[in-house]
Length: 237
Image (tube, rainbow, N blue to C red; front, side, top):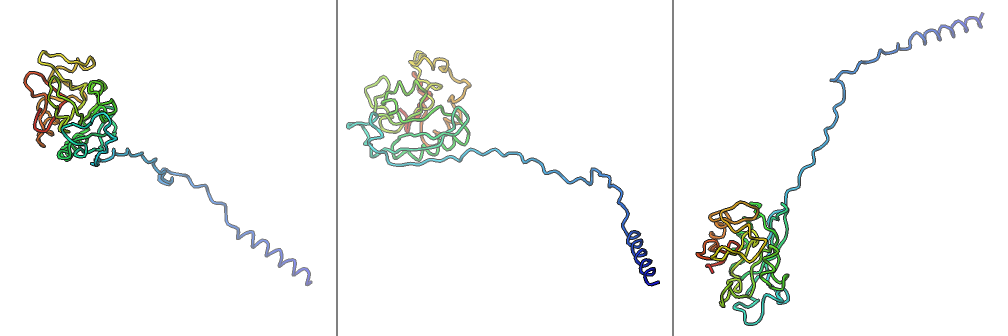
């Protein structure tokens, strides 16, 4: 009798456990609202061009092996090297160098800061010594430069470049034009008229001319007779 009772209890326990098992859940249907949000792919941001930068330092004699010599109207110790940012014809920032008189270094920094902020393009900017101080060679490759101890074009007098008080900008796009309307540079002949449109071209009354005028510099494009569209100088000449 004891054995039968124990078997009955064991059987009852098994049925009770089975009857208490949870029923299988019905599948949950996914809705658009129930889907987890997918993170959006971040859009890459463009890197802004570097801000304008200019550094004015004394210039050593060895930086001017061709453009300065004893007898020049200004001593090299009175010149300054300006290393500055400019906007290129390739729509990218570049670093160039100019040498000017110490008294006008701030003028140049002021003007070229504006040109850079305007994204006004300059082809290249190297010391004229890169071309052995050959003014024709520097102009022919469209080089923007300043100090060069040389005489004025067609004159026995010193140029304002020899005093560090002049700069030539984009000389191909802004050539020197004789009173008869000709230019010595073949690659500049299509730029002899003014006004005209074009990258790096300087026109009468434009913002480049006004920027230089604001610091007391005159434009060679206003000369009577010959025109020097590339040329800006402190006090003229």
